[in-house]
Length: 172
Image (cartoon, rainbow, N blue to C red; front, top):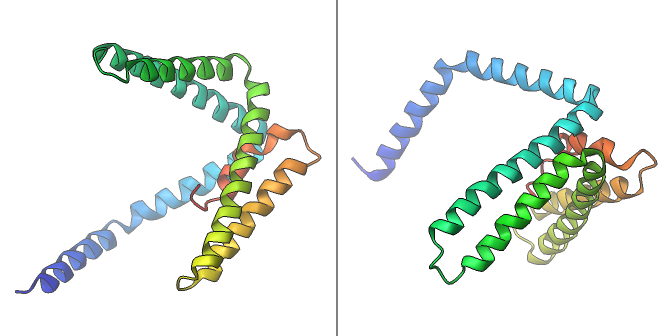
């Protein structure tokens, strides 16, 4: 039996298992659609929850990084690791303490990521010219457009954070 036959058999078994569990995939798809509709309908609440979750994750990550920093205090990079943990903690605290100001800041950072990432993707795809490069250029242009729209929108700046995260899935 060649390696290719073994790989084909393994892939075939995986496909058979996926076919057996199709009901779970349908249920997951329906749940994600419902969650997306609820998030878009309650964009202010979804944005607030996103900011608070991000803040708590940063705070938790800071505590874990501080513990790790003190466990490896003899390491030459201790000070940078310690400083990174402190800045992460301060950022998490500020996101939790001032969520409505933080949503504006995060939205502007997200718009900057869209702009920079989209410009880079567009230029790199057009320059490298790999197969089907047009789709990558289109993806980059969509990212640039979302960044520009977000930056120039007449609505209050923070209200689109959750919606942009749902709408833009180009792999930032």
